[in-house]
Amino acid sequence: MPRKPSVRSTLGQALSPAETVAQPRPPSDIYNMAGKRLADLVIGGALLLLTAPLVLVLGLAVVLGTGWPAFYRARRIGKDGRVFGMWKLRTMVHDADQLLEDWRRDGHHLRSEYEQRYKITEDPRVTRLGRFLRKTSLDELPQFWNVIKGDMSLVGPRPVTGRETDLYESERELLLSVRPGVTGAWQVAGRSLVPYNRRMELELDYCRHPTLGRDLAILARTPLAIISTRGAS
Image (cartoon, rainbow, N blue to C red):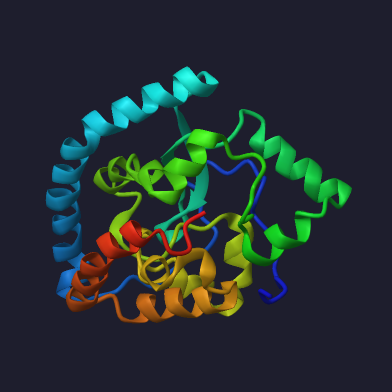
């Protein structure tokens, strides 16, 4: 079970994209100051173009299945504590966020699972097509746009909500010292099969050592992790 937060959550507050929740320490080596961003632009741009036709087809499938919108913009905390919108293909029913708040308020039986893992394994809000998109990680493809914008990197810690940053307590500054990633140590280690506390350890260890070699190793392992669907939900 995650550690109990010791500071006030930022989830639900009216933060603008320019507001921050921490003052992180950025990595100071050449790769993290310039090389990583250059790789994100070159590789991320190529992947964005290559996957654009597939994203359009899948977006149309979402609209035909459950109506507009095709995409969902999730509120996340990124590098330097900046709030940004993380793009995904919509995999849930339209009132998914309100349903979650209702469950938390009313003590729904799924509340404890969400508060322990910030994820629900058999989430009834997920549509039939959404389950397929999540299982194959195809719902994540629009995040290449976040990479180009500079909100995210190809490799990094998983983007977190304001409530999740509180769990990191004194290590929150370290977590927010690097851009969150489309893939990362947690994803290639088993995703939802990894306990949340272990996920936190993996993410923080990456933030301490975000090297070129490590990024290449994670990128090399990502296709197999996607194909195996291990821990995908």
